[in-house]
Each structure stands twice: as structure tokens, then as C-alpha cells.
Image 1 (tube, rainbow, N blue to C red):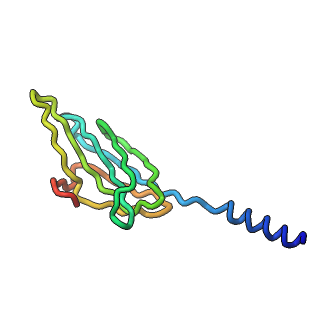
Image 2: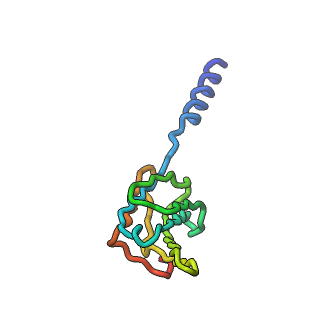
Length: 124
């Protein structure tokens, strides 16, 4: 009886000590566009069924690094940028970074946004 109890305790400890897998993405933003007006970034996380499962909004982004923990089922990210001009009619423009970022599980995926990115009004 003691052996069975000991086996159950060990099994429960092994199950309880399961290593949690964390996936991160790091947005490295390096633009000089702030001189026009501040940009907002909307990061959309998708699962394997191409469903949006989480989003992160960065208002008035400035140069620097931003690290986020992805949802456990996130496979990829897409990023939508928006800018609101402070003119007489408050013109707003929205466009996509024309790239899909596939995340590496249990690691940090770097997403670099600089003057070399391609943007589009069409979703990638």
C-alpha cells in the first residue's frame, strides 16, 4: 500500500512540475516618422486556424523595444499601423506591415520596424 501511495505522489509531482512554455515577441521600433505624427501599432495574434486570439495596442509608439508574451496558441502575428494627423479634419490613415511574423515557440521572435518595411492597405 505504501508503494502505491508513493508512486501516486511521485506521479502527481511530475505532472505538477510540468514546464510552462512561454513564447515572446519583441518589437524593435526604429523610425524617424514621429516628426510627422505619432503612430499607433495594433499587433494581432493568430492561431493555427487563422483566428485572432489576442491583440496588443501600442499608442504613440516611440523608438525602442517592446516585449510581449504571446498567447499559448499563437502561431503568427500581423501588424496594423495607424496615424492621425492633427489637421483641420483629423485625417486618419491605416495600413498593414506587409509581412506575417511566425513566432518561435518557447523563444523570443524579433520584429523589426524601420524604414525598410513594406506597407500596404491590403492585409498580408
